Image 1: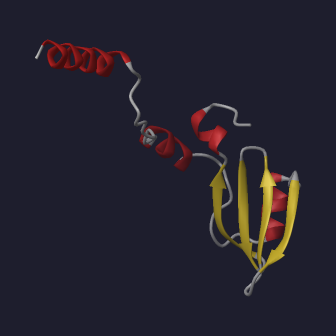
Image 2: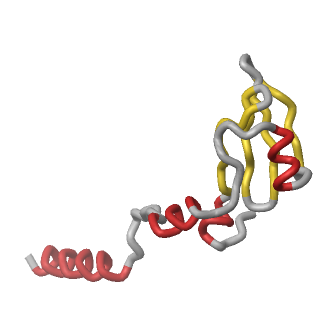
Length: 102
């Protein structure tokens, strides 16, 4: 009986001292709201309009699939085109969180 009580006490103490095994992602609602107000290309702009307004991309990726989808990377965000029109713009994670990722 004493061993059982001792084992139970040790188990309870270990439960309080060990780090939790589960971690959760944080929902960044305020950061996403802030991203909505950023100056980035919007759906329907042409490649020419994006170049004229935001300059040359840092990197371009070849078109993939049918219809062809092209990605251009800028500092802090990427823009995706279907043919010549913007489909959507995606912020890079470090732009939203303010932390550089490796």
